[in-house]
Length: 290
View 1 (tube, helix red, strand yellow):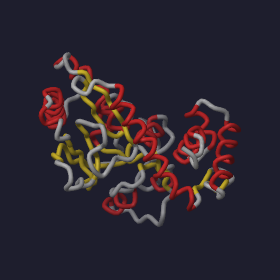
View 2 (cartoon, helix red, strand yellow):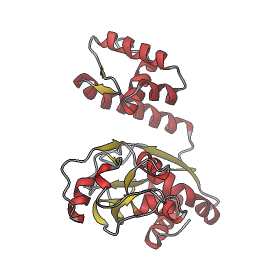
View 3 (cartoon, one colour):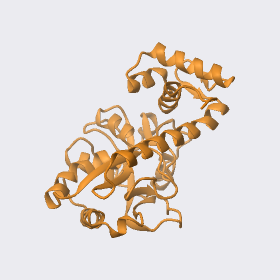
View 4 (spheres, helix red, strand yellow):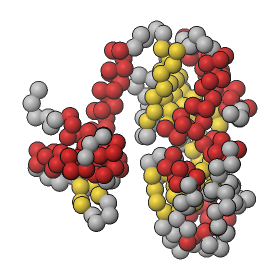
């Protein structure tokens, strides 16, 4: 096949776009910063147009980069799903997909309970930053955090939630000083700092907010005392219960996004999928502690 750039150039592009940093991409790919930069230059030369604006403090995607990024990500996703399909025993392994923060903060701490209850079920856990509109390819069961999913999939509502600011214990913040602190949030959410502040009755002009593609980053910053993050119960309760985060203000805003359980047609006849789905409902509805 001709007309395609080398795969390592595309990996460097995707990682650089995800981090908006050659240094961050180098860390993710276990490469040097200069090697990543050279691969991006080579890819830009191959395409005949720039993919990034090189700003003093960060990268910024050009219009070409913005258009090319979803193409590259879809290609990697197709390769990953196709490889998984070839290397697994379809009848034995339950494929579960959810977003990264839910997997880390909620599901992973509870998986030992599922294994204790169902030691016969073998699972693979897949995580995505950007969840698909329809059923994720290759997944038997998906836990999706979004507004109402497409009518093309059968989605069962698992949980609605509220969001609110969180910070490290002892972090010096008040409602009056909140807008002057570093504020962090997950991008592309319906509930934002501005919406929460308006409901709280704060008169904010336009506070600066740092956005990340996953809630895991704002939560990590908040835990270290580096600023304030917006969070919701499902992903933050474990950190709050452990004393790593506190909720300094009383107001809790209703989220428009919710958690949904989606099963593939194949999963509806799989005992392992039904065992996991039943366990998941019990844990979510009971909000089982870790």
